[in-house]
Length: 239
Ligand SMILES: Nc1ncnc2c1ncn2[C@@H]1O[C@H](COP(=O)(O)OP(=O)(O)OP(=O)(O)O)[C@@H](O)[C@H]1O
Image 1 (cartoon, protein in one colour):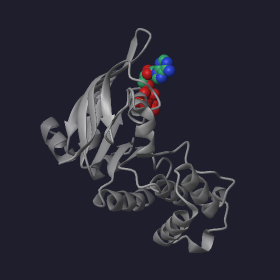
Image 2 (image 1 turned 30 degrees about the horizontal axis):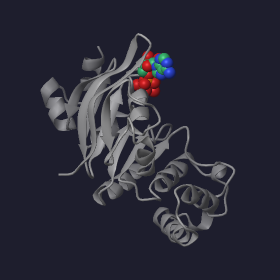
Image 3 (image 1 turned 45 degrees about the vertical axis):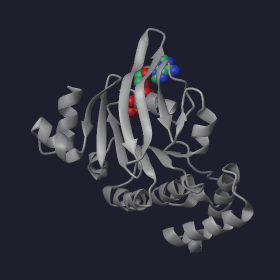
């Protein structure tokens, strides 16, 4: 098995406050890893270190083969990222978004065209290519943003609450795309507050006050905590 993320005592402090406290975990190639925790548990702070935009105060992580502490630029080049808040340009149409982000990722115009055709076909968006992204339903935007995050074929894609605000059926459709990417060997690191999504992950970790308090498959965690749902695991830990 190939490890694509390895965190070793990964820590971030702000003054006297330790927001992320000595995280140790590994994620394998093609794995779907759910990163859960209550509001303020430290998920975003940890993810910022893993994607190379925030330096650890102590410890380190190897992501896609590079150390976040001193190879952050290489980390950024080899990952994809999508968040609910920052995804696509509303004022550009579907094609322009793909051209824009493809350009940022360093793809030439020929491969951008190939990728564009593949994405619109895969998502069934051929008839909407000229439409501004702003006018698309949220669920479609999310699927498009995910496809854009994969344009440069990153080894890992980080998803920060990717399906916020949509119903369970739309979330399920989004997860079909996640499975497809994972089956092709892309590692998926996803934060979510939705327990149905947590159930779809191969393994999940649950953070409480800066520390990982549980980490295993959804099935094992439910067994370990003697409960029938991940929501109950979550509530037991948060309490
Ligand atoms: N730049 C900062 N300076 C000081 N404290 C910070 C900073 N960034 C985050 N924190 C604190 O670190 C803690 C963890 O925040 P973080 O945003 O990582 O949590 P989270 O698990 O992502 O929460 P949410 O689910 O609400 O996004 C919080 O108490 C937050 O106030």
